Length: 360
Ligand SMILES: Nc1ncnc2c1ncn2[C@@H]1O[C@H](COP(=O)(O)OP(=O)(O)OP(=O)(O)O)[C@@H](O)[C@H]1O
Ligand SMILES: [Mg+2]
Image (cartoon, rainbow, N blue to C red; front, side):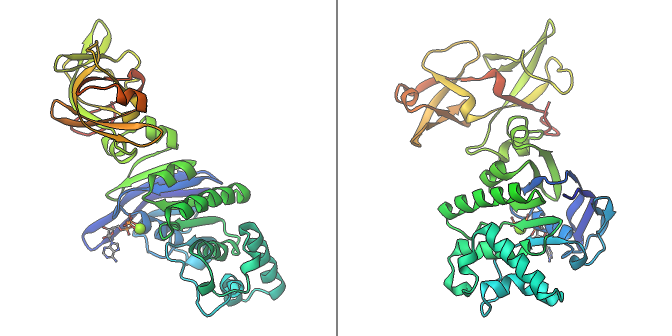
């Protein structure tokens, strides 16, 4: 198990900074997911760790040793890409053993490793086939096998499942998770799919514009987003936001939105709240209860759309010009009229500072 420390890594193309001093301390055996929108620098960071893309500043340490200027082949990494890039004329066995043969490894050792990897991935019956005779999921398994045979210290994955259909993606996701549990090796995995990130990661690094916005467990990222960007990016539909003002009276904080007051007795402020302070109030769709009648802490809203999803129903709302969504049970949704009151759960509130967009 290898500790990976990414310490101030920078990369620019001309004047455009693509990685702006990235810091990540990855524990031995972790499954870290790099998550973020297209173009935020995920693949560039992964390629820097692999040694496929030169870093221009900072260090990348494997167990304390800086490898940032080492050749890719000296880094003891295994990498799996989005496109499987299998050699079409070679059998699965030859594809998996290719790098080992190039490295001059003895045949018995090669056979042992290929058989081991094929066993782990349950592709033994496919070893003598060529890639054209494999399904998408089987090809991706071979691509993973090719990385596995290197017995790497760190495995790197760049969107390995994005070419697969939804059902297969779900199955392969479970297999990759099981693989990590079996190998206990450090995994770093790039995706822009938040479900993949939430289900696989021990910790998620949310990136945007070449920076890490937050590095935390899936639960921390979901429940305590440290920036408005993270709050907005994670969750579907995304968090509901509205501008509000803080009130602090007699040591108790509350939130003022027009006529509505929401008590904040349970909110863990990062810094003491100030009376009159403007804030962005955020609440997730599943943290809202809808009622017909007004009550303290409930925001008047008009229903603009209802989307039954099976297990629950999404209700789209207009709250004084803001588009909100609430996730409620089908029974609750059926009972609603057009005018409702949306009551946020005090335990599920996020507050952000409007200027910095950082969590309060
Ligand atoms: N060779 C290059 N020359 C100039 N700019 C580049 C080059 N390669 C990447 N970039 C830019 O660097 C930024 C980060 O690219 P990167 O491929 O790391 O993004 P990503 O987060 O992996 O996105 P995606 O989810 O679309 O794969 C992008 O804005 C991209 O346009
Ligand atoms: Mg990419």
